[in-house]
Image (cartoon, rainbow, N blue to C red; front, side):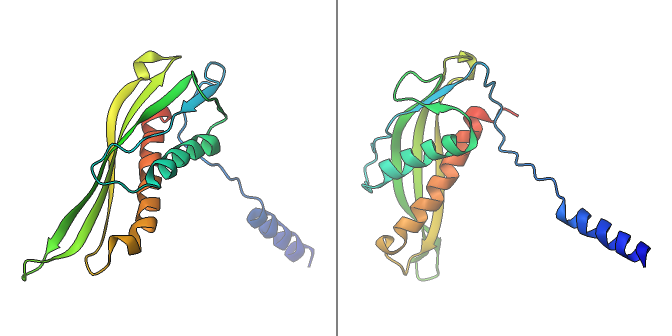
Length: 167
């Protein structure tokens, strides 16, 4: 009986005690890098979706706030991200036999100038793009908000990884 109770207790403890390790990919030397600045990303694309600038900028700030211990500052951060939204494009995809597209692709392109004041050779100026397809039977206005959320999540992850995930 004692063996059964002991075995049950050990099994319970083994299931209850788990080690959780969250790897966010950041390789930041917090003894040197203390702050970040992310400026507003204005829309410079020909086609404009007004909430995109704020949605993207806040998404980028949010990922740095959640996944680093860096303190946000309005200007002159140790790490600075600035740039613009250069593309917001719709293109037909999957053309059917009747020459009409069955899907449409929404692509967002962002130019990012990343400045690392602590290690300048890490700095860069490059563009990032992400897209989502949606059925051509739907109007863009019906799916736009959901698509933008997904695209912004992908873009901010890619930018975060390119800037502070040097592994």
